[in-house]
Length: 309
Image (cartoon, rainbow, N blue to C red; front, side, top):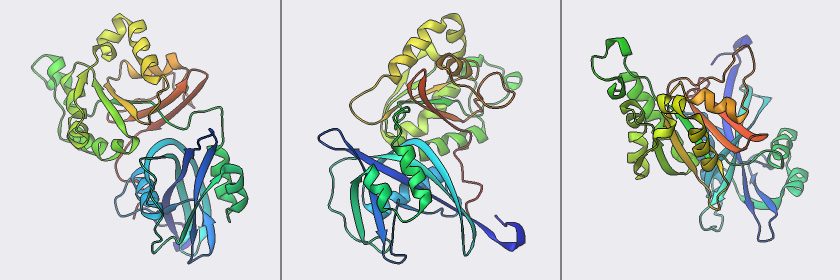
């Protein structure tokens, strides 16, 4: 994307990778880049047409060799480089799987696991310290437990002759479903649940194929079912948000008449003039924690980042 005066916008993404020690402490991974002789968080530029979260996980895996699961969205840092104005979108990421010995690569020649305060002392750039401060927060969870997906775009209700429950996705909706299947595995899904509507089930079918997880019915989160018994639906949501020992998320596909009401009941508020939080078709809310200490990230579109080259 061109910037003022002919300078470019450089889009990058990365992660604050964390793990817990045997004693319950928090450690994070820093990388040393020989080319710049600096200590930093793993990150890199977006490829052409790439989603920022996908780029963040790809770059972390390439630079560190670690398997990670995406967590809470962190900060966007901004600074100036020779090519123009650079921004880096960060996510918190949990290291998973069996730890492997680090192998130097063309970008990184050393990796260190350090307590967060020691990492903040070692990093070269001040903007990395801001991300590490976000990682160290104790008032918000680092990982989501629930991805609440609004079904992708379906054909118009007025143009559909059959029962509304059977209204299918249209071409744009099928593209959105494929985009969801590209990005949502980065959160480590452990179960896929859907309201009893064809368009909801079709939204998650590509994700089911990608992950090998079965699609399970969750009628309580359908629009009409929620309206009839909101307490039952909220009880399900609270169960899905409950802490679990292993990383990973539950993915639920629901409808526009239910999702904003669930969010309001959980205490999610939206800046501006909207009464209810948004839930565009094909969008995702990543939720973790509990009311009063809830992390709620809204992903309006999981397609290519607008600043990707």
